[in-house]
Image (tube, rainbow, N blue to C red):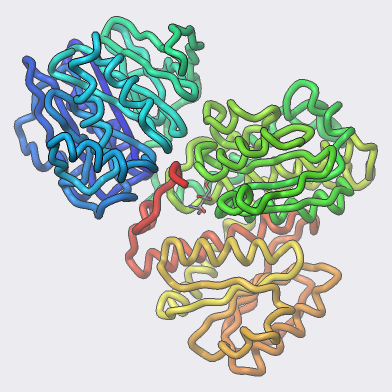
Length: 607
Ligand code: AGP
């Protein structure tokens, strides 16, 4: 969501902060700001707009300062404006904050009663004032910050600097991620290590309730009880190509084309012969899986759609029932937990606040165990879950999830196979699916070749205000994913329905202004689906049907697009590709901001 960068160095930190903000910009981008400490003074600059607008405030003359904090904001409390941008200041204090302070109204009232005036409408500004109010009764900036933090309800990751205590940054986390980056004679902080990959590859991940004191030579971390603790230093080895678009126009385009390779990486080291390897979800997982009688999935957005597809696989391959919930709803429905239920979260970022809150809630329930499917091994979700599998898709920068989704599906299929193996179910089917998984990257390459055909149909859809996506069974969640992708980056209203539901209402919408995009794989209900599509045709609807080569249908208005052949159980992955390309091409024609669509953030770290 929002992004934080901090640096304390011998050299000027401005360029480090700006580069860090640019790397985080995909997370939140309605405004940006920074504070630099130079010769005992803090200079703060903030602006509405993107990081480049912040840079423009400085023009040619780059500002000096060896200690600094910076922020990109995605508004939650208070409209996007330069006043509401971070850092927020109070006396000697300057603060950046990610998260939401739930008791900000009462704190604001209390602080105002002490004669202090607020400059912004944000919840975050209370943190700056609270720290300042605690300065005179504290021995250090860290002590003042710790006292202030004890007053906050909600979620935060913060970085604080002060003219009274120069040469250091205080950072703290509770509910929002924060990492310390270690350099030589310089140290850093950020809400995501990706912001600091240009300056270091060594990181310390703060745990819940931690407060860190960082100087250029050293760092120390205190846990939620104020006790000095040791935290592991993690060295990141992977090559950082994430910030480069290379030959592509957008990160989304690049990430669509990365999918065959990403899936190879998801499968790497997880299959053996015609089965899955044991314990690929962590030591002891195969034993635990023997006991599982039910699965509960909790996720948001695209990750939830992956879960909906997988629920079908858990049923047909692992022979297990699955309950699936929006993470934002799960903990508010007082869920009944059956004995021996496995709690599964799915998340690209591993920092989605609702999904994390779902996991934390589930830990207080009688689940057998928890497991996550995640793309970021260092994320909070990965660290707090009992068992995990990493999708290894590489960083996904485009707000619209593409390779994260297809690799989640592959990882979820590995879970279905592992559960079936531990439970001694369906060995022949497992062998069939494993062979199909091995063939999948090649078939994906075939799917990507459909781009030219999709380019032809994109103009018909780009001129419309609405679109309807249809699929049946395992393809209904794919229809939902197609609709989400289209609305997210092209701003066209799109809805998804199971095709059999059409005649129960949505058929009334059909006319030449609402393109209908349908998926027709070779399934046992293919004929029924074709009948549903005939109902659309009969009402003058325009149909774009992605179908198995065996399906024959006459389409006068629209187009029938033949998909490459693949094992039915994996067809959802193959059919997703043209839907991603379609939304991308439509958005290109409509000239939207594809990688950073309006009002959205890549990682939603507030509830
Ligand atoms: C999809 O294109 C999205 N941008 C969004 O729905 C996303 O999948 C959702 O916010 C969940 O994110 P996560 O996978 O990082 O938890």
